[in-house]
Image (cartoon, rainbow, N blue to C red; front, top):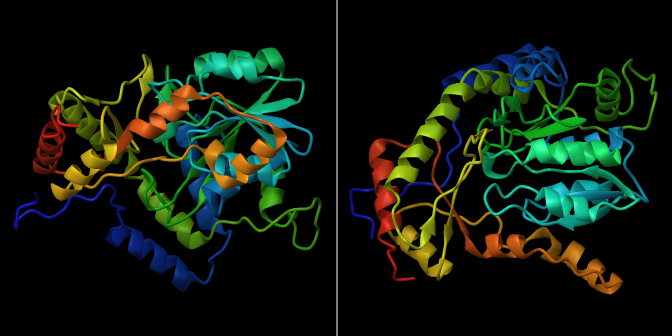
Length: 372
């Protein structure tokens, strides 16, 4: 139980400091508030995180996924291979362009797509693979990219939780035809709200810029059918400030995770493994609980330790997917996905934690013992 002098430790804590506030106010006073110089500068700055790729800022991570699929020409009649153990936006973007979602199972360690499951899921209709770098751990891109090349498939990286993560020195968002990032307030860095698409293809980048702005580069000279997915300059200004801090925050997250790795010893709890060559940026510090997870979460909450499950229901079991699949007679065999959904619990790992907070978290987890 939390003592009278101990405040609960939140599972996540967005950081909005005076610099972010001043940047937002400066833009508001300028009168140039949408798709202006701040957005261009934010795109240029973010490019440094993805090996110099072209960056196109948009209004959300979901829009980034949606727009990238549109830009690649994915649509009706196509299939996209997606993990079911992810936020629904990963699959929703595929449905929004009219393509079919094919779910593949995950690896138990990284929670990313299992390359063998992806290989088995490829059909003549497959147009793309969507690896999700879940919780900040890179998917097995060293194995997924050869599969994509073998079958001539596009690779759309969902890196919305993995700013500055990398595998064998290559940052996420710099492997496939395009990568996508989110700047929602709970992410490792944010812009209040927003998203980014990254690509090495200059032609694709121009198409994405058209798509986000009603299909036009010059005012009223519409070249294609587009939408309004623009980022505001207020959001971009906040994002630019956060770009100067995300490096330090990332190292603090990694140090916090290392502390928890070393101090969590409960026999019924598994701490998050890290694949060889992977740079994990710990958007979430996700343990597995063997036993009564709900009881474990209740005990953690009683001890004042914020916790949450990402994600308790795999996408293939959500109503918009489950009902059509059942009517069509499709049943997905995803044992690792189902097991992860039943066992995972995410603990605080954000950079605002102090050593005392980390000690409290570890002690609360260890107190679960073998009683569950």
